[in-house]
Length: 279
Image (cartoon, rainbow, N blue to C red; front, side, top):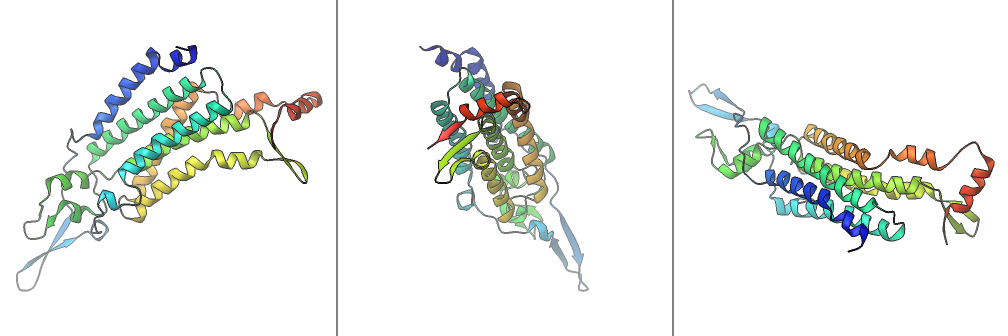
């Protein structure tokens, strides 16, 4: 087995994979969220009849997972295939010893810690989803939920798992791409001469983060989560992505400063010679 493959599939990667798998087990319905009381108000009419008033912000129609803009299956596929696809493309385009192993280990740790913390907070808080009444089958007569499985899911709104997972995987991928782009300038030969296309490459490197914004925003659009759920979930995923990226790679912009010296004219000339030329 080649040395690079032995590094990728070494003991450290195996241990991190086991840790990641253990954290993903929290996605299973092993723990029941905090049973927060269903919000309602009892209003007694003049004839003595009691009427249950629902919280309007929690009385939105329930959308099943397979009918959502970004269902769970699509989320998992994007958060796995996009990073691995980027890693494969970068490895073929500009390979560097040990880089693939560092990416896989950092990526797995990012996802594992994000899933673990998100599910831990979800079950501890047990906050209501915007379609609480519809998902749990709330009965105004008995003033209780009639769907046990729906009741548990309806209490897992804060924070958003879609937001945390998408931002953890996509931001880690974008930071990896930004590191490659800022390592040296990119130039393109056009009819007007050689043009600097580094800014275009930077925007392309940020495209995974834009995908994460779309996934997170879709959860608010169809009333799967409250805006606060999205913000905190995005923060959790982003924080873990930055932490584990810096653990395995140097800071993106620091790498760029180290590779390009602003003071030496000769160095500036050498940088132009070494720049990536795109015909």
